[in-house]
Length: 492
Image 1 (cartoon, rainbow, N blue to C red):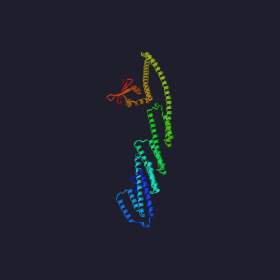
Image 2 (cartoon, helix red, strand yellow; image 1 turned 180 degrees about the horizontal axis):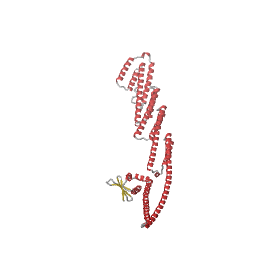
Image 3 (cartoon, helix red, strand yellow; image 1 turned 60 degrees about the horizontal axis):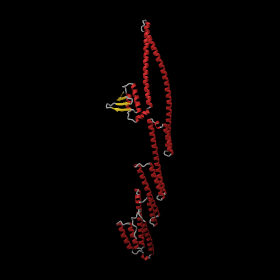
Image 4 (cartoon, rainbow, N blue to C red; image 1 turned 90 degrees about the horizontal axis):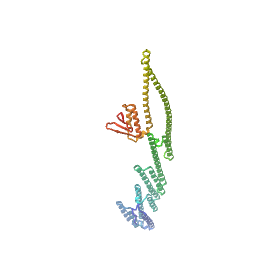
């Protein structure tokens, strides 16, 4: 009887091996039964010959690598040769059983190596195989080993459980490795990472339903996957909330910097109201915790309160300034009226004094001459008062013009800055020239500032540099402004 070849492994068909082992086991039982029925006189006949033959073969196996199937075949033939001797049958049976278990152990090791490699390399498809099919084959073969009596039930259970655990834990390890690699080097998104964890949960359940893993292994495995899912969802939600906060802060910072809320149909008050509602939605969707919700809504609510309070303060300040301006207007009107009276009275006095001077000019009496001198002093005083009034009127007109330009610049600051933002104009050079200039008159500064501001507002300005380190600004009104260092010049 020839034993099955050892090359039949987990990847092939071991049914023939099982049948050979089964036939050998049946033959052993028949030979043992025959030996018990022999007469006593045949007991031990040719025992010395068996011992010599056995010792020779054992020595041979120690000096050469004899395949197990060849060894089994030798012991089967020897048992058949000495079939009349119970001791020989017993000795041969023990060796065949021992070698068969060793053969089964090799098959188990080959199976373990195969599934370990396939799981590590994740190349099941290259072999036209899959983990569950491999497990089913291992389970089936171990059932046959159990049925033939070559392994115990405890060994059967251990072999099957170990194979299932090896397949499951190997795949879990491979899945984790893949997810970590893809996330670190290929930018795997949080959603795709979560999808991968869900696939791990799915095949964990399948492995449990197909008997690859026990309930304890499944419970531990799915528990770890759920923890990873919770951590990843938490990380994803943190990224979502953090990204929204960054965008919101940037929007607020830009609008505050450029002062263009109205341009976008927005306001700081509306911004904070939207922010509070969005935070509430994030909490309702489970994206943020209650602590984050509580702290951030409180901070946004306080910012909203400050903004609304500032708006009310500005409204009250505007009202106060309007009242102040109105009072100033009334005072100006009153002053102007008094000044007009004074001017009229002074002109009348000048006329009267001039007439009297004509009368007393040729006076010969002492009193007449004194009167003439008094009238001259009075006329000089009136004329000086008139000159002072004219100077004040002229200076007040200049100040009023500058104040109007300031109010214009203040009111249109946002528009001016917005235009400057989209141009290559270096406004800091102009401001330095205007602030440091001591070479031109105040009135000319006002006229130049007026022209520059209006040119910026209309974007009708041209700046060029000659080779003398002097920058020249051509304005749309024909005026030309040139500045070098701290001095500013203008001309037409």
